Figure 1 (spheres, rainbow, N blue to C red):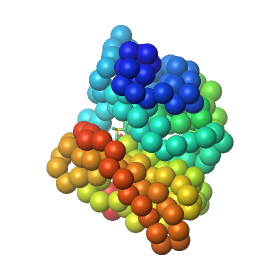
Figure 2: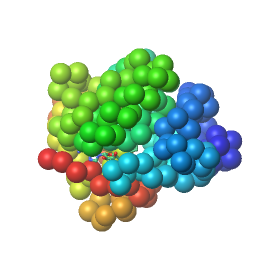
Figure 3: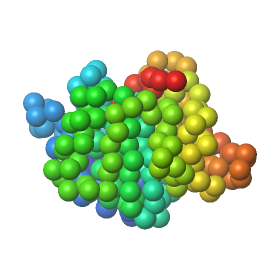
Figure 4: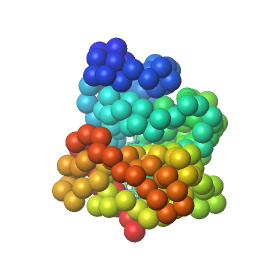
Length: 201
Ligand code: SAM
Protein backbone atom coordinates (compact mmCIF):
# COMPACT_ATOMS: atom_id res chain seq x y z
CA UNK A 1 0.00 0.00 0.00
CA UNK A 2 2.70 2.48 1.03
CA UNK A 3 4.91 1.83 -1.97
CA UNK A 4 2.23 1.56 -4.64
CA UNK A 5 -0.28 4.16 -3.45
CA UNK A 6 1.69 6.68 -1.40
CA UNK A 7 5.36 6.82 -2.47
CA UNK A 8 4.45 6.46 -6.16
CA UNK A 9 2.28 9.61 -5.89
CA UNK A 10 5.06 11.68 -4.39
CA UNK A 11 4.70 11.50 -0.60
CA UNK A 12 8.26 10.80 0.54
CA UNK A 13 8.30 12.12 4.12
CA UNK A 14 10.15 9.50 6.15
CA UNK A 15 8.03 9.96 9.28
CA UNK A 16 4.76 9.74 7.39
CA UNK A 17 5.79 6.61 5.49
CA UNK A 18 6.99 4.92 8.69
CA UNK A 19 3.72 5.78 10.43
CA UNK A 20 1.64 4.45 7.52
CA UNK A 21 3.65 1.21 7.56
CA UNK A 22 3.08 0.73 11.28
CA UNK A 23 -0.69 1.24 11.55
CA UNK A 24 -2.73 -1.95 10.91
CA UNK A 25 -5.46 -0.44 8.70
CA UNK A 26 -7.55 -3.64 8.77
CA UNK A 27 -8.33 -2.99 12.46
CA UNK A 28 -10.05 0.30 11.55
CA UNK A 29 -12.45 -0.98 8.86
CA UNK A 30 -15.69 -2.90 9.48
CA UNK A 31 -15.07 -6.67 9.84
CA UNK A 32 -16.96 -7.52 6.63
CA UNK A 33 -14.63 -5.19 4.66
CA UNK A 34 -11.30 -6.24 6.14
CA UNK A 35 -10.21 -7.94 2.92
CA UNK A 36 -10.43 -4.50 1.26
CA UNK A 37 -8.54 -2.61 3.99
CA UNK A 38 -5.47 -1.90 1.80
CA UNK A 39 -7.45 -0.94 -1.33
CA UNK A 40 -6.63 2.37 -3.05
CA UNK A 41 -9.94 4.00 -2.05
CA UNK A 42 -12.05 5.25 0.86
CA UNK A 43 -14.31 2.61 2.47
CA UNK A 44 -17.68 2.92 4.21
CA UNK A 45 -17.82 2.95 8.02
CA UNK A 46 -20.95 3.22 10.23
CA UNK A 47 -23.09 6.38 10.26
CA UNK A 48 -22.86 6.86 6.48
CA UNK A 49 -19.25 8.05 6.88
CA UNK A 50 -15.94 6.91 5.35
CA UNK A 51 -12.41 5.94 6.31
CA UNK A 52 -10.34 8.06 3.93
CA UNK A 53 -8.22 6.69 1.07
CA UNK A 54 -4.73 5.80 2.41
CA UNK A 55 -2.98 8.23 0.04
CA UNK A 56 -5.18 11.14 1.18
CA UNK A 57 -4.40 10.38 4.82
CA UNK A 58 -0.66 10.36 4.00
CA UNK A 59 -0.96 13.59 1.97
CA UNK A 60 -2.84 15.43 4.72
CA UNK A 61 -0.52 14.27 7.50
CA UNK A 62 2.49 15.26 5.38
CA UNK A 63 0.93 18.70 4.82
CA UNK A 64 0.95 19.32 8.59
CA UNK A 65 4.80 19.29 8.46
CA UNK A 66 5.18 17.45 11.76
CA UNK A 67 8.69 16.81 13.01
CA UNK A 68 7.69 14.57 15.93
CA UNK A 69 6.57 15.18 19.50
CA UNK A 70 3.74 17.63 18.75
CA UNK A 71 0.31 18.07 20.31
CA UNK A 72 -2.22 17.60 17.50
CA UNK A 73 -5.98 18.09 17.20
CA UNK A 74 -8.01 16.08 14.67
CA UNK A 75 -11.63 16.92 13.86
CA UNK A 76 -13.54 13.95 12.39
CA UNK A 77 -12.21 10.82 14.10
CA UNK A 78 -14.33 8.46 11.98
CA UNK A 79 -12.71 5.02 12.28
CA UNK A 80 -9.71 6.37 14.23
CA UNK A 81 -7.26 5.41 11.45
CA UNK A 82 -5.86 8.90 10.74
CA UNK A 83 -5.62 9.52 14.50
CA UNK A 84 -3.46 6.38 14.77
CA UNK A 85 -1.21 7.56 11.92
CA UNK A 86 -0.85 10.95 13.65
CA UNK A 87 -0.14 9.22 16.97
CA UNK A 88 2.83 7.41 15.41
CA UNK A 89 4.47 10.82 14.87
CA UNK A 90 3.01 13.23 17.44
CA UNK A 91 3.31 13.06 21.22
CA UNK A 92 -0.43 13.52 21.89
CA UNK A 93 -3.45 13.41 19.61
CA UNK A 94 -6.83 14.86 20.61
CA UNK A 95 -9.56 13.76 18.22
CA UNK A 96 -13.24 14.75 18.08
CA UNK A 97 -16.14 12.91 16.42
CA UNK A 98 -19.79 14.06 16.28
CA UNK A 99 -21.28 10.55 15.82
CA UNK A 100 -21.32 8.75 19.16
CA UNK A 101 -21.13 5.24 17.71
CA UNK A 102 -17.97 6.17 15.76
CA UNK A 103 -16.34 7.96 18.70
CA UNK A 104 -16.90 4.91 20.90
CA UNK A 105 -15.72 2.44 18.25
CA UNK A 106 -12.58 4.47 17.51
CA UNK A 107 -11.73 4.87 21.20
CA UNK A 108 -11.98 1.09 21.64
CA UNK A 109 -9.88 0.12 18.62
CA UNK A 110 -7.25 2.77 19.42
CA UNK A 111 -6.99 1.57 23.01
CA UNK A 112 -6.82 -2.10 21.98
CA UNK A 113 -4.11 -1.23 19.45
CA UNK A 114 -1.97 0.41 22.13
CA UNK A 115 -2.46 4.07 21.18
CA UNK A 116 -2.54 5.44 24.72
CA UNK A 117 -1.52 8.89 23.40
CA UNK A 118 -4.85 9.36 21.55
CA UNK A 119 -7.78 10.99 23.36
CA UNK A 120 -11.22 10.69 21.73
CA UNK A 121 -14.13 13.02 22.46
CA UNK A 122 -17.75 12.81 21.28
CA UNK A 123 -18.62 16.45 20.41
CA UNK A 124 -18.89 19.08 17.68
CA UNK A 125 -15.27 19.51 16.60
CA UNK A 126 -15.86 22.87 14.92
CA UNK A 127 -15.49 24.36 18.41
CA UNK A 128 -12.13 22.65 18.94
CA UNK A 129 -10.97 21.36 22.32
CA UNK A 130 -10.57 24.47 24.46
CA UNK A 131 -9.18 22.74 27.56
CA UNK A 132 -6.27 21.30 25.59
CA UNK A 133 -5.49 24.24 23.27
CA UNK A 134 -3.22 25.52 21.83
CA UNK A 135 -2.20 22.84 19.32
CA UNK A 136 0.94 22.58 17.19
CA UNK A 137 -1.17 21.28 14.30
CA UNK A 138 -4.85 20.72 13.47
CA UNK A 139 -6.23 18.28 10.90
CA UNK A 140 -9.87 18.45 9.82
CA UNK A 141 -11.04 15.28 8.08
CA UNK A 142 -14.40 16.60 6.76
CA UNK A 143 -15.27 19.36 4.27
CA UNK A 144 -16.18 22.73 5.83
CA UNK A 145 -17.93 25.69 4.14
CA UNK A 146 -15.30 27.99 5.73
CA UNK A 147 -12.44 27.77 8.22
CA UNK A 148 -13.93 27.53 11.74
CA UNK A 149 -12.71 30.56 13.76
CA UNK A 150 -12.37 28.58 16.97
CA UNK A 151 -9.87 26.26 15.28
CA UNK A 152 -7.76 29.23 14.13
CA UNK A 153 -7.76 30.55 17.70
CA UNK A 154 -6.57 27.18 19.04
CA UNK A 155 -3.57 26.95 16.69
CA UNK A 156 -0.10 27.86 18.03
CA UNK A 157 1.85 30.56 16.22
CA UNK A 158 3.90 28.71 13.58
CA UNK A 159 1.38 25.84 13.51
CA UNK A 160 -0.48 24.45 10.50
CA UNK A 161 -4.19 23.74 10.07
CA UNK A 162 -5.06 21.44 7.15
CA UNK A 163 -8.67 21.13 6.04
CA UNK A 164 -10.95 20.65 3.02
CA UNK A 165 -12.93 23.80 2.20
CA UNK A 166 -15.84 24.21 -0.17
CA UNK A 167 -19.55 24.71 -0.49
CA UNK A 168 -20.20 21.86 -2.90
CA UNK A 169 -21.16 18.59 -1.25
CA UNK A 170 -18.19 16.22 -1.49
CA UNK A 171 -16.01 18.48 -3.69
CA UNK A 172 -13.57 20.73 -1.91
CA UNK A 173 -10.12 22.33 -2.01
CA UNK A 174 -7.66 21.03 0.57
CA UNK A 175 -5.98 24.06 2.13
CA UNK A 176 -3.23 24.71 4.66
CA UNK A 177 -3.53 27.69 6.99
CA UNK A 178 -0.36 28.68 8.86
CA UNK A 179 -0.59 30.98 11.87
CA UNK A 180 2.22 33.45 11.45
CA UNK A 181 1.20 35.90 14.19
CA UNK A 182 -1.45 36.55 16.83
CA UNK A 183 -3.89 37.76 14.15
CA UNK A 184 -2.01 36.83 10.98
CA UNK A 185 -2.62 33.73 8.89
CA UNK A 186 -1.29 32.53 5.54
CA UNK A 187 -3.34 30.25 3.31
CA UNK A 188 -2.23 27.84 0.56
CA UNK A 189 -4.26 25.63 -1.78
CA UNK A 190 -2.90 22.07 -1.81
CA UNK A 191 -5.21 19.82 -3.85
CA UNK A 192 -8.77 19.11 -4.96
CA UNK A 193 -10.42 16.56 -2.67
CA UNK A 194 -13.76 14.91 -1.91
CA UNK A 195 -14.82 14.63 1.73
CA UNK A 196 -18.05 14.04 3.63
CA UNK A 197 -19.30 17.35 5.07
CA UNK A 198 -18.26 18.89 8.37
CA UNK A 199 -21.53 19.31 10.25
CA UNK A 200 -21.60 21.70 13.21
CA UNK A 201 -21.56 25.31 14.37
N1 SAM B 1 -10.29 10.52 9.83
C1 SAM B 1 -11.27 9.49 9.66
C2 SAM B 1 -10.65 8.11 9.57
O1 SAM B 1 -9.43 7.99 9.58
O2 SAM B 1 -11.44 7.15 9.53
C3 SAM B 1 -12.18 9.73 8.47
C4 SAM B 1 -13.06 10.88 8.71
S1 SAM B 1 -14.54 10.89 7.79
C5 SAM B 1 -13.98 11.28 6.19
C6 SAM B 1 -15.18 12.44 8.42
C7 SAM B 1 -15.70 12.34 9.85
O3 SAM B 1 -15.98 13.65 10.31
C8 SAM B 1 -17.00 11.55 9.97
O4 SAM B 1 -16.85 10.49 10.86
C9 SAM B 1 -17.99 12.60 10.49
O5 SAM B 1 -18.97 12.08 11.35
C10 SAM B 1 -17.06 13.56 11.18
N2 SAM B 1 -17.60 14.91 11.41
C11 SAM B 1 -18.34 15.68 10.58
N3 SAM B 1 -18.62 16.86 11.17
C12 SAM B 1 -18.02 16.83 12.39
C13 SAM B 1 -17.93 17.76 13.47
N4 SAM B 1 -18.49 18.96 13.43
N5 SAM B 1 -17.23 17.39 14.58
C14 SAM B 1 -16.62 16.19 14.65
N6 SAM B 1 -16.68 15.27 13.67
C15 SAM B 1 -17.36 15.59 12.56
